[in-house]
Image 1 (cartoon, one colour):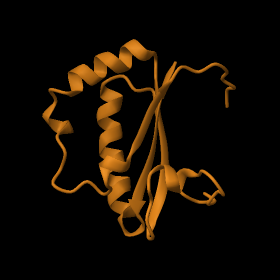
Image 2 (image 1 turned 30 degrees about the vertical axis):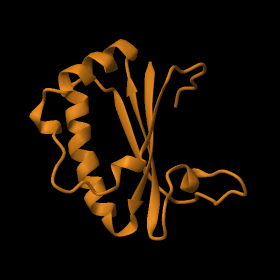
Image 3 (image 1 turned 180 degrees about the horizontal axis):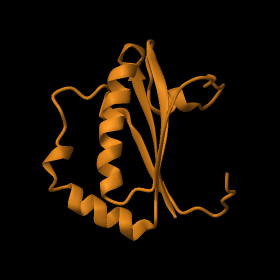
Length: 117
């Protein structure tokens, strides 16, 4: 198992546009071998004294935090998928992405402990 995680500031009024964008992307990621995708809209994301999700992505007034992760079988599967996706025209950015991608945070992780559902 290999996990790609994202923290994304999304304008509050673009929640539905983001949901559609993520849903379309998820179908493509599944084609490339992604096992699971969870998209989560901010519900309780407190502002911290020193650090927090809002500061991490330089969120501004009117933006909400999206926390999302993708579960891949392993790192090699993700890397092979990324190479193939680079040539897939369906992944070309639409005219309007419902958030500022320059402030998105991406990190990939090898799990050290997993508890099943």
